[in-house]
Length: 291
Ligand code: HPA
Image (tube, rainbow, N blue to C red):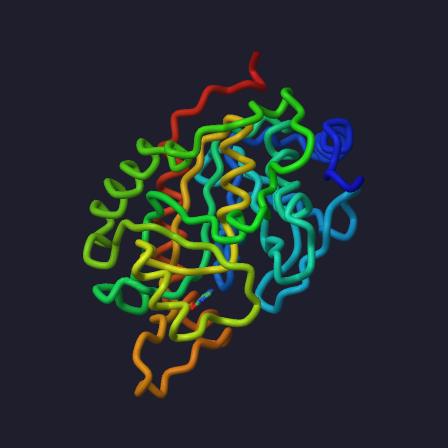
């Protein structure tokens, strides 16, 4: 990787390296968030690549993230899952965090489904709610941490991409329909996700600020991946599992912690797997591999 990120050729050589080692031609990529790695275990006839074995790939350092790419079929659809993702707080440059999106694009992926665990700022939310992300606030972006900063390679996308349509409305609608059919309506929400750099959780004052700015949930991932995926023309759907409620009250004894995040993931894991796999089974994507 150079100062300005990975080149098109770096991404292409990693994509080709992977494609030459599996017969799967994925149209959909799934990014499993903290405690939600079980999604990848649903993949049939899996072909797994440890991040440490993939050329150019960063390593995942977080407890609760396995650190591997899993290729296979989910409800008959060819897919690739990231079991473990990369975060700013691990110390990676933002271009490194988002590299997998470009590799997916060059492998022919048309749609990306991202999951994360997040703190609920919206006072109507409960632990265990699932928020369909309709929009984001890229807080590190305000300070210049944008994965598209640096020279732009037009082969990926345009210099100044529009972000008002970053979250595909049809995919969000599909999630809502599938969720209602499965009887999940009661805990499905829709809202705005704000990303921060972490790894420290927010102070009470920061939670108040984010809430006033219009964020419904706060976390440390997803947004950078969505910016890069959307830039390159892949459709994006993302959801947050509300793993804890952000503390807004100085009298509260609650403390955000990573164990709670993983525990809530375990509680909802089965239902989220059902939601995402049913969505995947109904995706109508153009097969670029058939051309
Ligand atoms: N804040 C930031 N990131 C998180 C949280 C939180 O409360 N919960 C899960 N990820």
